[in-house]
Image (cartoon, rainbow, N blue to C red):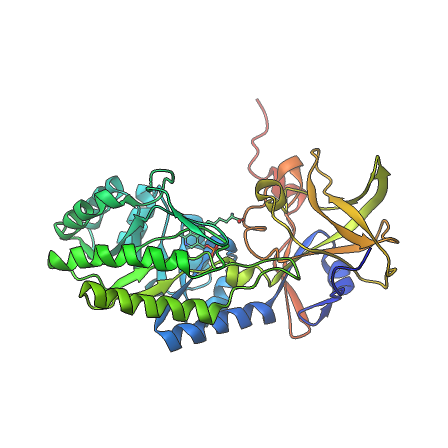
Length: 420
Ligand code: LLP
């Protein structure tokens, strides 16, 4: 069997074996050179095309990452007090933060009304009412209404689903009433509409369809004397972890969106609102690599298994979504012959992390890198089996440092209350 890729032995200019010995395994290494380049690309395109770019913190947010983002022009989406607290610890300016979430608590709405973020994306009528009430105690709050455009995006197509099959946002039939209500609330300033179609989208068409819907809403709002200044079309820009996988042409996609925005604004006779996007995965996924040590390689039935020292606890996406993270044996020279191998974690489940060709001479003690784990891997990690969560290590320009320490066994029992 053929090798499926070249082994990458360095991350951010740091040898993987050095990372493994400095921090032990499993670990999540974030190549800050790759991350910075992705941020710079979005920032450049945003500036050139007049698109506001916000990083969706849910993909990965730790204090050091927020500190890094703070120095860029990007905004930041937070969807919980936890994400907000993380950003605040980093000194990320409130003026560049947006609060998301489809079930915001009063505490979160009060944080927004208290000026800890610049604006709120309101998900539903009840939230609009609660925010209108809470915001009365403070300065007016800028809001965007989240639309449910009823579009389901797939890799190569989109379908209108009538909007009833997802919990998010205002159904299109309820939007006009929500706009009326927002206009009637002295403590709220309606600045925009928002939608998010889903993740890993590889073409412009679904975004264009959702933009058209948003602009129709803008036209109706303008007719009521409520000009809408901004339309955010969400995140979801595709990233494929397979080395031969699909690539989204970001510049072409964003250019197409801007052209579509202007075309639709002309058609509907409204001033073109400002466009916003909020990518998470497309900024951070490729920068991340999960590094494991092989515990054993064994044959069972027809299969060759490699059990590694991680699991679905630190790397849950394969189990939840069938996600593929490309594995590469690293850290030494390997045989050129490969054999299909099922890489499993060490949890008490059939936790397959990936099935792929790996070197015939792979053995216990070797290092295995799983690529493109920067997004939604650490942020979704758990302590299943009471495994401590791995450290997050920044590696770039040949230097490295832990930005999240490995959890200790004491961390695991910190909130346990002993005694009867
Ligand atoms: N904006 C909103 C309102 C969102 O809900 C999301 C993601 C994003 C932006 C960013 O989407 P991205 O550019 O990262 O695709 N846990 C799943 C992904 C869930 C995405 C949730 N929302 C995964 O691991 O694939």
